[in-house]
Structure formats: structure tokens, C-alpha cells
Image 1 (cartoon, rainbow, N blue to C red):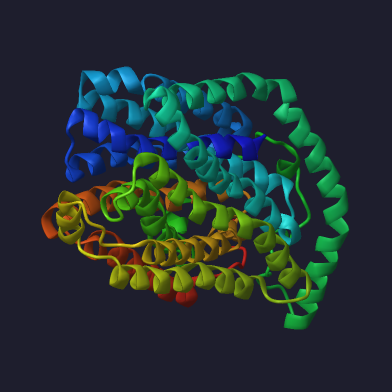
Image 2 (cartoon, helix red, strand yellow):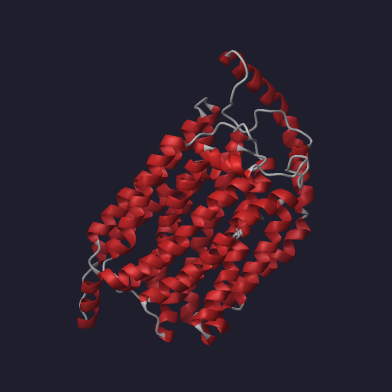
Length: 459
């Protein structure tokens, strides 16, 4: 059910990425205004990350997730009438969607950190967060045909109803009871293994020391209570978080990874329309292909990463390898796309003259490069997205709140800046691909330097 919620989450993100094409034509928006509308989602999304982490830690992820899904579905539902009223009203509804979706990552992390041992965590996180990639693919698959047959409002109404149905069904599966049963089962299975691991590592090091697992201590009473993750005084050690180099590594990595993910998520349909001269249905379909590639990679990522851990490879090394793949490979693809894509002014002149600048072969090459970039990006699910739970299962949702706040900033800055740069430079390379490659390479350097999976002293 959590994975399904994440599918719906990204369906309600990508609907605007595709719908913005006919909306811009109907309502007369410039590229800057397209970017403004697309980025408004992230105004709300970034505002909820720290509160979401604290609330999920305090009252439990199941309740928070239900409230988030209901809120973002309501914001999606009222989007079409708001767009007809004014661009400001539309942006306000997208802020509501962002507010609701901002609760989902921390809520899911709060549940997974309690349920899943470290040797199985890569697979669990990859499955749940892979729902985002499935949601992008499904949303893009549906948006083009729905807009063609029923108009752009249909993608808002349909996706909103699906979310409201999920919110109504979620309590019926009794998530609190389900989680408690799974925790009890995991406690019994993990206690003996963790004791052996702690003793073996302590003996090897000549005494106590940090362990390459978030589960090095036997589960406590707090571990068995779904809604009680805080210590007795109820305080979260925020100051200690910001003194920790590994926390900064994950924070920077989250920002850099999301710069590419969010800007491409928002702009790829418009890129295919404006740069390649395709209609909304074909733009939606071609945007789907990279997300299918990413989704296809997901079943490989979790088992491979967990297999490395079980074979004895240090957990920190596993995280760095996976995140390095997710950064460096896509950066190379972005540079290639920047070189191969003609300037926006050139394609605009060709469109006005009725000629074609980018033929089917070059279009295929560009789509292939983007598909490789997205598929390699899937390795982040076994990299930075697992790292919060490695550092501290108790405070994993609070940590994700911090890093996801940083990760939401590119949705505001990157998506808006891409539209502004496209208007001012008429260059897709400078607006979209080069900034993404720079962020990815910088993130690779910082994460390789500072990242760790050792449980922190404040946990």
C-alpha cells in the first residue's frame, strides 16, 4: 500500500509536466511562466519536510501518510478551475499538492526504519521509492491519451479521485496492527543475529566501536512500539545532526540528485515539444521511455546491493558505490545531450519555416541517452535513500526531513531557473543539461568524501 501511495504521488507530479503544454498554449504562458507553475509544487513540498520528519517521528508514519495523500489529492482536484481563474490560484493549488506530498517520504521512512533490518533495507526502500518511478511512468503513459480524448483537466480529476480512494482504503488494512505484527516478527529474527554481529566486531576491534549496520543493538521497547520512536524526553538532537559530516553528505547528495530529477521531470515533455517539435501525445510518450528504463532497473538495484552487504562488503562502501553510479553515469549522459541538442532559437526558426532540425535518428539517440541516465539514477535507491536509516533508525524520518528539504530546493530553483534561462539564453544546454551535470558531479565528490553508514553516537 505504501508503494501504491508513492505511485499516486508521482502521478500527481507528472500530470502538470504534460498538461502544461496545452495549458500554456490555451492560456498564453511564456517559458518562465511554465517554470513558475511547475515549480510552485515545490514551494509547498519544501515547507513540509522538517515538520513531516518531526510529526512522523512523534505520532507514527501511518497516520501522517494518510493525511498527506488526502491533502495532495484535494489540491489536484481543484487545479483545473483554479487555472481558469488565474495563474496565482493555480500555483496555490500546486502548493497544496506539494504540502501533502511532502509528508510521504518521512512517513514511509518512519515505518521502514522500524520494520526492516539492514540486510533487507535496500530491497524494501527500492520497492517503496520505486513507486515514484512507476508513478512517473504510469502518469506519463496516461496523460497524453487522456488529454487528447478528454482535455487537460481530465488528468487532474482522475488522478485526484484515485488518491482519495487510496486515503479511504488505507485505514481498512489496519496499518498500525500490520506494522506491530511485523515488528514483533523482526525482533525475534534479528535479536540473535545482531548480538553475534556486535560481539564479533567488538572482539575484532579490541573493544566497543561503531558498527556497519543500523541494527547493531538488540531491539528495545521503543523499537516494538510503532508510534514511540522518541527517547523519554521527547527531544530530537537537531544540533547533533548538523555537526555530523555523514548527515551533510546525504544532504548535499539529495540536493544534487534532485536537481536533475526534478528539472527533468518538469521539463522533459516541454523539451520534446519545443526542441524536437513533437505534439503533446508524442512528447508524453517519449518522456515515458526514460522512466520505464528507471523502473526496469529497480528490481536489480535492491537485491544486488543487499547481496553485497550479505557477502561482507562494508555497508558504507556499498552506499558509495551505488550513489556514485547514480551520479557519474547520468552526468556523462547530460553532457552528451547538451552537445547534441540544437539551440532553442534554431528549432524555433525551423518550426516556423516548416522544416525539421532534429531527425528521427538524433531523436532516438537523445531518448536513449536520457534513458541510460534515468536507469543509472535508480541506483540512488540503494545509496542516499537508505543512508538515513543506516545512520539512525530512531531518527530516520527526522533526518529525511532535513535532507528532503534540501532536496526540494532544486524543485523551486532548478525548475524556475530552467524556464528563465531558456527565455534568456535560448539554449537547452545552458538551461537544463549543463547545470544538471555540474550538480551531479559535485554531489559525487562530496558523497564519496563524507558519506558513512556507521550508526552515529547521537542515535
